[in-house]
Image (cartoon, rainbow, N blue to C red; front, side):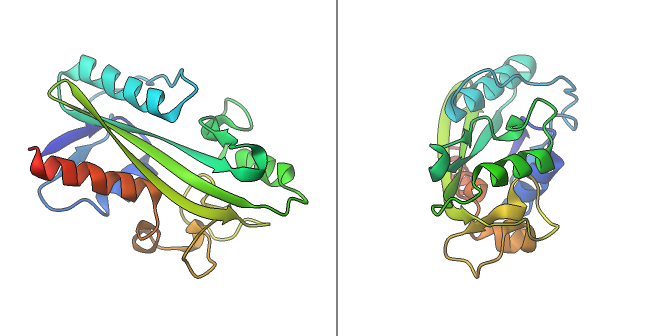
Length: 193
């Protein structure tokens, strides 16, 4: 089965391809010949994921899926949440976003957080949604050079104390919010080909 993944984020594509079972193939927007930015105009992950899937389906008429992910930090009332990618401004700078997050958590005793992903699948014009959550905490300082986004400061619950950025893709996949949502998507497609 081939699906268009409504992203040009190579990190997200690699992360999903690393855990996708045989028989499934995903194409990035670029690989599908789509070079426009897909808007994320809403204040919820669910609405943004659905909008991206809707736009790609309308452009191509093909089955596709999209995702929207947010880092939700308890001490910040769930922020940055849906605004995670642009937390420090519209230039989408991961290091600036992380720096702002750490400044806002300076002195906080509750550093609990969670990554939450919503995947929206458009299959034959019908929409289906899948959620994945990874609880954890925000470290005091960035650690590791792998991953992307907030990975250098996110320590998943149940791990060995390393951040996502200190893990291999396979190690991160054991905890990943995106992987949990993808597993639900794949399970759905397996029984609804």
